[in-house]
Length: 614
Image (cartoon, rainbow, N blue to C red; front, side, top):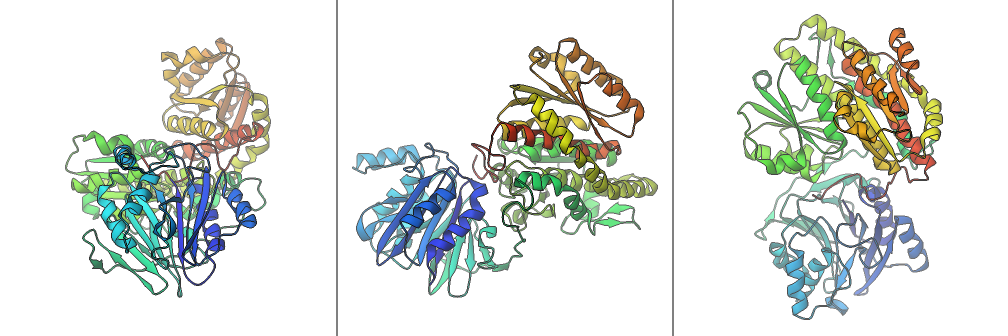
């Protein structure tokens, strides 16, 4: 959840480290800090709050030196304050050790008690300080040796960057379960949690693997394995995606990313349609068509928004490919040890490609011999590299913590996969061609749906003072109700719940009153009358109703308009594409309510973009 960057070279480290922290702030923004080294002296600067607070401190109290480490934090142990901010320093003089850490040390408490019994004084509440104190205690003359001696004592996950005046030209990195990459420049080297932090600095990286240690100096670098032996590693060239400084013409990155969804959907489809085969094709699946054809079950796994995209995928794959699907929270799947049929394929859905629980689910599935496919938005991420096959989402960088275009891109890719699997099994060529045409028309439907912006802004102003909201949908729109409620919770801090509309009367209806709006997602078809009956049950109890419905179906639109307090109309699309179109006004509603409540839309409290801890 935290962001790490380190530098060894000939330039002043602090400006480069600050620049990298700015790109890593999506990983946590509770506090930030930097440590540099010059003339065998450590310079430590830390501040609670955003990276900007640290930048202000450095402008008043510079941190000189051409070697340094920096960190932006998402708190796990101890509140967000100056003392708990990284780097953590242990020891004195040239035996001091400065360290930054991403991950969680599960056995820190007994280690801390042992150190305290030997007289060690702690200055923070973090698990991380235990690591720095242990290394300082072990340090004699060789920082690398001290780090190697301490790592086997740690239970949990870590990405570390360590420095000490005892070895003033050396930076040591280590990884277990949390991402860390080495960046290779011209006479200078970097460590980072994410290659994106190195944009403009270098495009050559080494992805460190678990239990590897990297040793860096101005003279070069080498990687050691767990047995302390040098190993050969591959150097990759990464294409850094161009990211606009700030949010362009938009007030917030989230709003920008909502409006980027038509282009993101076009990118997801580009080059992946085969009119000749009436199907969607994917490079990188790395699973033989015969194996896909013989699959007897799919397990889709993810967390948060990605899990809800997986629920849509369940409907899609079961309808078009006629393959049974289970959707599992990755955090439960990794520990549950369910019985899994031999011909089962596991599909991991993730925006960042670094979600700890999803990565663990992939590893557990591979350990048991099941083919794995990753739907991922970040090339080179841990999950993208470890899965047997990968389908890039191509949504482009998503800066806002609350996912928008990544969700709709995930659903788009799942739709194409459902078509691909269906055509391998029973789906007819005419039906495949029809679906291709319908998917090609979808970006324009989303562009039209975005016209609801001004109307949703007015609706948000009407309901901004409510304290609870219900989101209700059926079939394909049930997962969208869950995702809409999540968006509202994430950025406005209002309590919201999503349910299948028919389940409302089995408990949630007790919440309905005049101060609890219900957002109904309404489509045509055989269950339209059922959903309208649920709507009437809310009205009978005085609950306000906000309805989202298809505008091109005049009968539906007129009936909904006569019964709902507010009606948001979106373009009519086939049922299986409705999740993407109906998600748009729900994203807008969450955005505008959060804005009116004075919340930080792009960086909501307590959240981070990449969840790399359990």
